[in-house]
Each structure stands twice: as structure tokens, then as C-alpha cells.
Length: 131
Image (cartoon, rainbow, N blue to C red; front, side):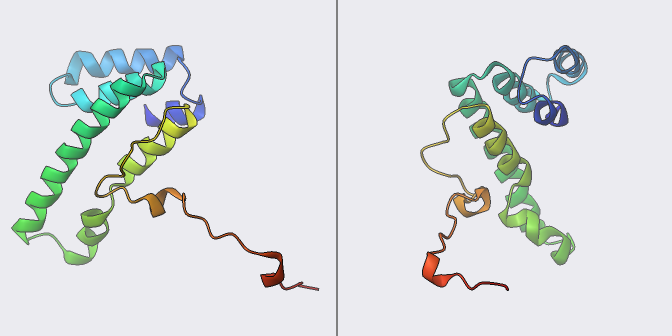
């Protein structure tokens, strides 16, 4: 579904609507947040997106913190997921592309720096010619 949103620029494509309907038919109980996020992106529904994003974020945080307390996961494999929610960053980027306003405060696991919002501006006197 996310691939369809990326390829079609968050437009309401027949394929995406069919995928959402199929997922809702078989996984509505376990995929509620993802369904709501995809539908909100497709419909460019800002309040719906932010509500679903916060719920999905809370679910990710709960799972991540539970896994961190277990201490049974391989440290090297778990550490990147411990501090960054890659799916959440992708969802925020899709929302931005759909013209939805970004959240007022960036959430844990979705740092503003990872979204590329604080780019360094090079001043002309810093540039060195390569030739």
C-alpha cells in the first residue's frame, strides 16, 4: 500500500482502494492504524492522518520499549530500531508530499533531523572550485 501511495503521489487509485478494502476484510482488527493512515493519506485528511499517526506511534513505542526490556534481541540488529521509526519517517514524508501539515512537535523515534528539515546552508565563501 505504501508503495502505491509513493508511486501515485497519494492519489486515489483504483488499485490502492482495492488493496485497502482487501486488507480491511482480512485484518481490520490488527491493521487498524495502517488502514487509517493509508486512507487519510489517500484522502488528504490531515486530522485523520495525525490521529492515526499518533496511535501507530504509540503502538510502535510500546512494542519497542517492551523489546528493549526483554534484552534477548541481538543488540546490533535492534539498536537502529530502538531509536528510529523508519516507517513513521516514511509516513511523515508521504504526508508532506500530500500537502498535509507536519505535526507541531516531532515525536520520539521520528527526529526532525532524520526528515532533512535542518539542512546546512553553504555560504558562497565556503565553496571551493573543483577545477
